[in-house]
Image (cartoon, rainbow, N blue to C red; front, side):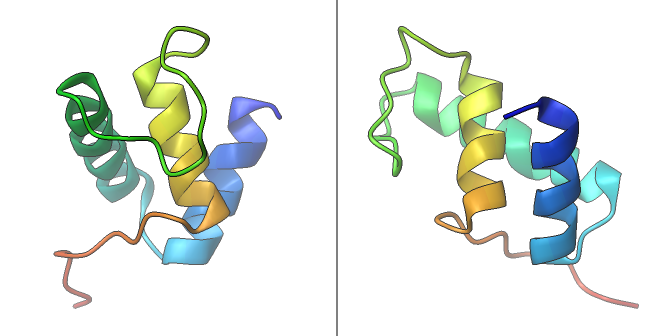
Length: 70
């Protein structure tokens, strides 16, 4: 799936703006690079950590918390 489609889907599911999504993807990618197991059973040797993090968020297997709505 194209990154633009994944990004739009993730923004719609989580109700975040693009800056909050970027922070969430970066944090999850860091977790994956530090040894966290992928929720989608995809090996990091075949895909970039940031792409995998975005896929996890857009599929709804990772919940993004910590941002408040004003």
